[in-house]
Amino acid sequence: MGGCGVRAPYDQSHTPMTAFGMAAVAWLVGLAIYQQDGFYSRPGLLLVTAAIAVCGGTIFFRRQTFAERARPRLMIIGLTGALLVQVLLLTAVPVPPLAKLAIGLVGAMALLQVLDLKRWRLRIFALTLAAFVVVASAVFLAVASHPQIDVFMFQQVSANGLLHGANPYAIRFPNLYRASTPVYGPGVVDAATNTLTFGLPYPPLSLLLVLPAYVLAGDCRFADVVAIALAAGLVAAVRPGRWNGLVAASFLLTPEVFYLVEGSWTEALMALTFSFVMFSALRWKAALPWALGLFFATKQTSVLAVPLVWILLDGPDRLRQYAVLMTKAALLALALTGPFFLWNPSAFWRSVVVYQFIQPQRLDALSHLVWMHYRLPGYDIVRWTPFALLVPATAFALWRTERSPAGFAAALTLVNLVFVAFNKQAFCNYYYFVIATALWAAAADDSPPAPAPIRNVA
Image (cartoon, rainbow, N blue to C red):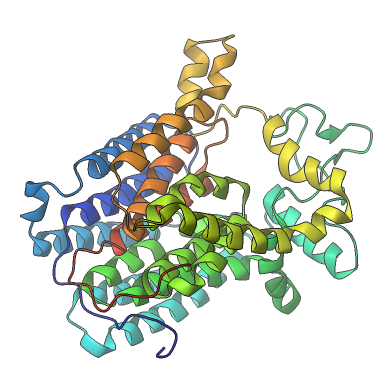
């Protein structure tokens, strides 16, 4: 990759407690969504609460003396043990015996990252990624070739419609659920036709990213599988070494990864574009504005990262750097989104913005809001809780997080985790993105001796 302003790879010989703390956050969240596939459960909510505490504590204490004395070898052992647990949980997925064997093989290949593989590390991980793509694709086709879930329908129908010249935001989808199922808010279902009154509820980039998979294979979920593999590959490649190899494997084999792919949730795509941001921040700063533009255009909740981008910048002219960086990112996001908005502004606004706010509170969500709902009935303030908590969470992250890519990922982990854990919609897919940001914070920690500096953003 010479000639692109990319840093030379190096092995990580020292891993501080901050990196281990963020890896622990990802593991706790993974166990939480494993309890009931991301639906409400008391053990799951306790694990989410523990993850918030560990994340906040890791950010607050970051570079204290006790953290600097932590032994990297113990951390490697701990992360290896956590990965082994994840592999065992994945092999418990209800699939045919041959598929279980294949999952176990992928897990065994991933666990090889604990060894001193030298120049073979990335090659072996590339084989692991290829095996994962094959196995994950076979699993979702075997378990749910045509799942009855609206997210899958939204993407399949929208991709087909776009190929035939139809506006995906003006399309009317059939309602897959019974009237007694509290999935949609008021005015969302047309009772006369049993169709939904909104179009694709995601920004257009998410549709464009899955379009090749639909064209080539007829199923947009192949794009999700590839996105997960690419994101894990970027984690492993950004700083090749034992620690990052294990972190990347942990992301690849998150306990609910097959369930996420099966449901076609778009957080796999969001994890990929966020990975582009982190890789650019660490290895190719010239591409950072455009990577941020892709990230902001992927899904609505990416807006939570806007104030936190400040953490990526340093030096006396941070305000100018921030203005330049965000302007370039906004221009790319607008270029990707604008044509679809102009196609039918009212349909786009209702589908992408209004629909998100009229969604009902789900009492099966893995959220503290469910607990609050039963103890504070009738209090309208409950539904505004996640937005109220965004202010102190963001302020705390900006105050205590170090200015670095790892700090940016850790800050976004805390803000997203708090926002989701107190939201009316809090399920497996939302927490999956938290796992991605937490593991990037663990992988991006800049404690090892840094090689030559890279060019500035501006």
